[in-house]
Length: 235
Image 1 (cartoon, helix red, strand yellow):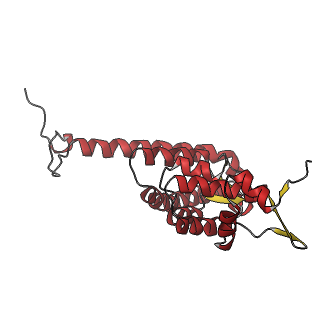
Image 2 (image 1 turned 45 degrees about the horizontal axis):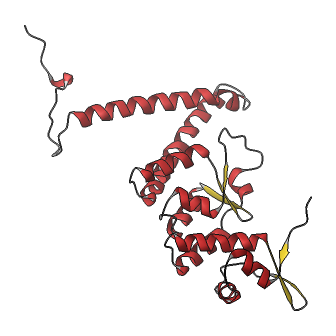
Image 3 (image 1 turned 90 degrees about the vertical axis):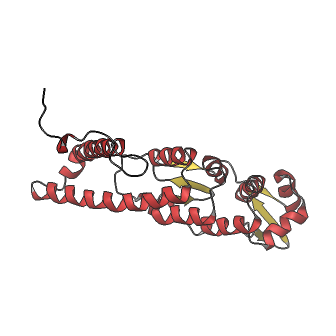
């Protein structure tokens, strides 16, 4: 295993493409972790370099230093990836490791301290060292696609909170149903059946909602035929 590289202050500033004065300023603002001290010498490592490159990227994307400081605090106090994913709980979801720069690129201009904290609270994000871990590639892809369609990230996260409540209720329903009629081992084996029921019912519910929307004009007036309110066919 390769030794962890360490830098003196001048070396770190050069590697990050900033001045020593700027590095001192970032350290005073607590945008980076304190260095390791060896006598009077301060030693920095690759985690400091990664954080400095993240700060530069976020500044280039229009974030303020105050906003970056709040993001850094939220990141440093985020849930550890072990707590997020659980140690013994099996999952069908694929976690995704991201650098802060990659996360910012996914949600251009909308990775605010408030949204980052909301995603942490919701359990979408965790931290692993200087990396961010999203709990589900599918949720990450869908969330970024919705944002690209013009839906604000804050509203996507708010909807995620409501969906989480409904999903927990459905999980409880199926868990109780299965455990009433078999051993606990059946939960994992019958999991795909529960997921299929939910996917099918959601698809049918969307069909019903789309039919209602198609029969309603912009002002809310009924515009199309509704078979439930039509009389018998006549010649």
